[in-house]
Length: 152
Image (cartoon, rainbow, N blue to C red):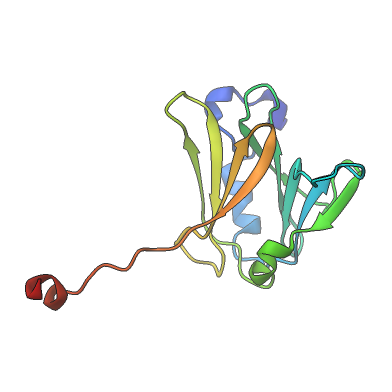
């Protein structure tokens, strides 16, 4: 089935989950963003998280700001000007792990979360906002030990 044929209720993930198994565990080789050459402030319109043989192509529906995530075999789909996302350089070499997708309170699928190091702990979130792809870091908040709680 073509990803464009999948119903909106599918959410942002536009691929068969079984195909994700082919990407899961691959080393991250590059993370790129598509920009407009003449933009004074480069806006990330699309992004690709590329493994060794397969990657995730993250785009935004400009009418709804919902993310669309599809599998890709190329690091720069559709041509245009693509740049390395230096802010995520520490993810290069990490194993692509689990993913999550989230719907906001208005019913829009605008958040995609990815783990690296083959982990089940979310580490990077991609947010569709104002027709752009924004990136956020995630980290676990350390819980206090039982001793620390009792001493309070």
